[in-house]
Amino acid sequence: MTRVLLAEDQGMMRGALALLLDLEEDMEVVAQVASGDEIVPTALEAGPDVALLDIELPGRSGLDAAAELHERLPSCTVLILTTFGRPGYLRRAMEAGAGGFLVKDGPVEELAGAIRRALAGERVIDPALAAAALSAGPNPLTRRECEVLSAAADGSTVADIAARLHLSGATVRNYLSAAIGKTSTRNRVEAVRAARRNGWL
Image (tube, rainbow, N blue to C red; front, side):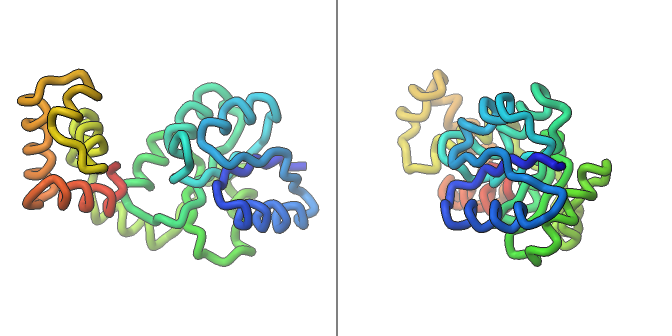
């Protein structure tokens, strides 16, 4: 019996997925969580064979949790199931050790099959997304540029960002300027939008 952990913040979606997977003769949903912070502790306690993770979760992203899960519970196969089929997210998921990446608008009957294939050692990736990721190329932003851009996303001033990230104002301006240049945008609002669209943030 394949033991499954579900991480999805929308209660109705989480309940529907659990119901569908429990209908499979060889699967059992052993844990459900609604926030990213709960993923690793719950997985360590429940010992699932598969963790089905959404990306955008309260507290912590599914991608960050996937990387820690891969390190601390390597016997658990991680599958990312998301609404946001962005090329950058796919790259980050693969770098985090995920065994698959599926978008939520795919046929529901394919999910159980994807879980079985991933458990058999196959990398399961939505074909259209795989093609888009290859054409998009790697994330041009450094880790620090991503941090500064993320901090700027809520409209924070340079001084606010500098204080939050323990950097000087001049350094923050340099990172923002570099990020704007690399995303071929005109300002930081556009840079944030472009980075999110590509799944780099």
